[in-house]
Amino acid sequence: MRQFMDITKALGDQTRVRILLMLRDGELCLCQVIEVLNLAPSTISKHVDLLRRAGLIEMRKEGRWHYYRLSDDRASAVVRDALRWVFDALKDEETVTSDAARLCCVREADLKELAECYNRN
Image 1: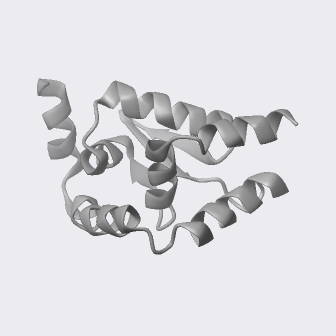
Image 2: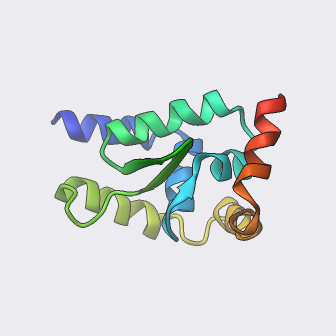
């Protein structure tokens, strides 16, 4: 029951759902997520923390970089079902399409340059 409640809480916010949808095409650095959503780093960090606690995403650290990806096939059935439901339900949503277009450019950007923008703010 606890995991179900954590998942429903995580899915109860548009920003967190957008993050999940951005991750469906592969791993992203936190700075890339920040760039697409144009929110403060601390705000994005809080959102990804909730997604991680719900088991929907995983994180790895490489040097100073934090990378996020969707939970893999080893995740519980409720996590896999929740992710499938989100992807199916929102595949044609305009915001999702817009984020995907923006993400395409952001994936090609240099991570150091992206991160420098947030260190100056």
